[in-house]
Length: 78
Image (cartoon, rainbow, N blue to C red; front, side, top):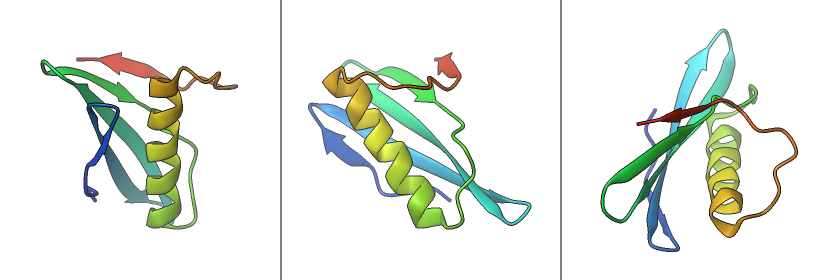
């Protein structure tokens, strides 16, 4: 399930949510001006698609704000 992109600090944030084994797992795509993209995740499973989406978008906002994130998930550069 692809979610509606969110514009934040000049970047476009897009959560991608997958339903598997009764759980929802998300990854977030961060696209900065100039086409530089970064995918972060997948994150831990959630009970609902909305919760998975909200977590992914908030995580991306935290990354862009430079906030410390306690557990860094895998990052894929692209």
